[in-house]
Length: 339
Image 1 (cartoon, helix red, strand yellow):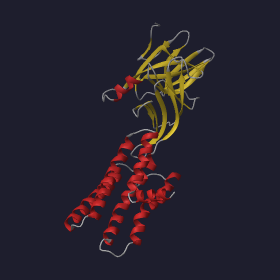
Image 2 (image 1 turned 90 degrees about the vertical axis):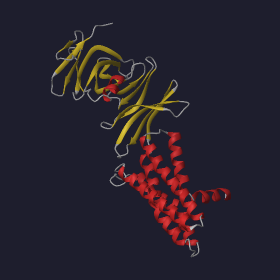
Image 3 (image 1 turned 45 degrees about the horizontal axis):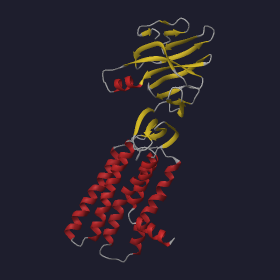
Image 4 (image 1 turned 120 degrees about the vertical axis):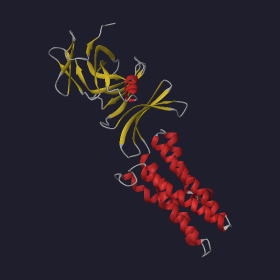
């Protein structure tokens, strides 16, 4: 027990070690996203400041002390400006319950230096101690606040084949919330980002389809699918509708979507109607597609009496009818030949 207390006291001399531990947990337990990399940059500056602080206190040369102090002060200002300029979280972010831990943590991590300062005699370095405590305290506060604010929360996770899939709630640098679907290799920390949503924020369950060898993210189940990963990765638009023993939803090929997103002149997608079982497994594309602009909103509704699925846009224009006799009504719609 005594050795643990001694170790705790020694590590409190350098709060950067405790903050590094938080990032280590972040790296081991979840994902290294943009927020993580930004946080590491702030932590790196604090690490350099800690080294300069140690060298400054050990040095006996006044010129060297002055030079080290100026460098340390510049790095501190740089760290503060970096935190303020890169996002609104430090000034305008809303408060949550978990943020209440900020102040206790800052007090604990700065207590050892404050204790030594009060206990120490009125030596010639006392003024230096006070200046260092004042200068480094804001940097400590930022490094405490950042990982607590941006640490991702896992909504759902599952394993399939050689991969792990995660739905994660997280925030970007400007403190805007969004949900993401990640695919990670089991034996490494390599993760690929599959899908994200900052608008509806309502996909919360991962579904495995063993028959099709696919993994899907579902929007609160009754709203339909959000994304499917497998031999034919795709993202879904709008809500699903039920007709008989199947559910129907419009989808976009994910490769086409990403290529379009990376091309400034691209503004249209190819929507394909998919038919799935009621549990959103065994999804198959149907021979009807619609090419339209990415601003066009498509709605599906089921006509139980006629046994048909109707697609229309937000201007109440009927796009196609799919049933025993599929039919298109607008340009860009096409009934494909059955293979």
